[in-house]
Amino acid sequence: MTRFSGFDVIGDVHGCYAALRELLDQLGYVRERGRYRHRDRRRPRQVLFLGDLIDRGPAIRDTVLLVQEMAAAGQAQLILGNHEHHAVLCCTPAPAELGRPWLRPRTERNMRVLEATLEEFANHPLDWRDFLAWCRTLPLFLDMGSFRLIHACWDERLLGAFRERCPDGVIDAALLLESATPGTFGARLLWRSTSGLTLQFPEGRSLTGQDGVQRRNFRSKFWVREPATLGDLEFQPDRLPDDLAALPLSDEQRAELVCYDADQPPLLVGHYWLRGRPRQLTRNIACLDYSAVLHGRLVAYRMDGEREIDNSKFVWVDGTPLEEMTYIG
Image 1 (cartoon, rainbow, N blue to C red):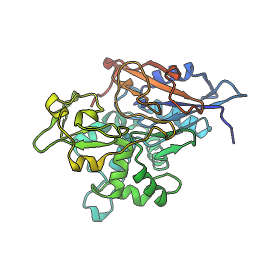
Image 2: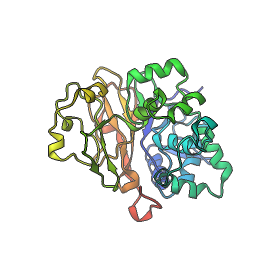
Image 3: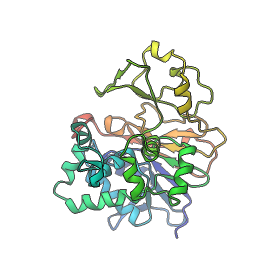
């Protein structure tokens, strides 16, 4: 087994194939026999992808094939993102007792998310079959000892129970089926891990986001020890109105809170559509999703076992211009 001198963690690619190749080049990877590997054979590094390879972008299948080739050669690992989980649920036949043909209903909104991906794979059904089969083997998280990866939120209570059911960290068939039913442990685990901590607005309140979708909840920080108001927890592109941000937390909201403590290993996540210059969120947490597919940046972090996130170790390239995208949703 190859011993790697360090790891390069890459955020949500979403089909930004050209940007991914440029970023790999900057990180010191070269293409040999059709596969990328680190150019330093004496001190090789491995790429760790935070999920969400698919949907939205201009070259989804090329992105998937590149990462699959790296993973097959031991040069990369991928964890499960919410978009991979969504694809598996929408494309896995449901048992008769669910009363529907697929694990996740193929509503207009659900299929709109997958539209660009399905279009690219339409003439490559075997590639699509192989990709879905691969997604079913992906770990939900990676705990590398000195640092951790998860797509959206590390909730030790849920992950502890998950480890007891699935010691290898991979969602098994029973848990995948459970994750398709709201209110179950499986659904809570997958939502929290791949979509983050979300808190409900007070009754009758909602927020229409930049994407035109009306939501009755908001994405929350998962590292604040003693928040007082909703505004203390806001962590999303759409700002809360001032009156909502000033509201104190209810008992129900407090019961949902998660806090990743400052003494835990560094944690790298994606998912959150950040903007601006990549930097740490806290001493030991960084998000690597800087909206590459929305004319942002495709971002990597060069991890070498440090105990604190080092702002000098972010590497990035420009993402995909909006006019080149096949779908934004």
